[in-house]
Image (cartoon, rainbow, N blue to C red; front, side):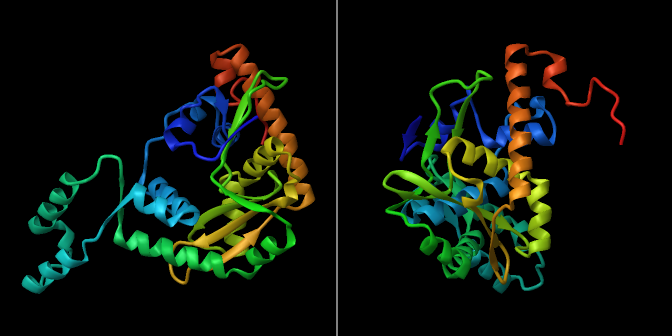
Length: 280
């Protein structure tokens, strides 16, 4: 296994031969065909990337993102034309934004000022979370690794290679002892997060990471942080039954992906229940 402390997003995602947790989750939720689709950047993905970067390193955040602050131009427009209900639709605003975009560093992504402030509130909420503080105390660690990339070099029994990039690892003498995964959400309550947990198959993500990192699954923690006021945060993990079911399903998915790689065909790339009658 190769471990990279600094591997760019582009280089990490260029490892096409290596299966990621996102690929596994997409197969579980739909099909291999869906998992193979190229994911285009969306505002939600850009926000998530910015949040994770800020949590990791505020300096790196400033290097990667340009903040678009439109508060001044909006104030000027409203002062001149108080009857305007949507200042962002005016010619003045569009001209200002176009000029801003023309002067951009092509290597940086754009983030609104509101989103930057939202991420700062979210970070403060995570820092103040008592349950998260307790994890740092409970697990003896000599280091914290943020966004380290782990890439397997030897194929497994199904002929597969893997890659993972945990948000944060607590490490004892270079050995990972706990995983912390940041999750932005609209509602960090148990009921709401439980819904997100199954909808986005966070259970498979934990099983996949822990399987590769050789960490017990009950040492995987999700920190759910609301991206709107009051920016509550909560910490979750997995009970034994959920762990066992996730591991069993992960093995079935590995087998399915391995068979597809051996014989790419409409039968292996489509839905799992496409070739049989399924009784509900």
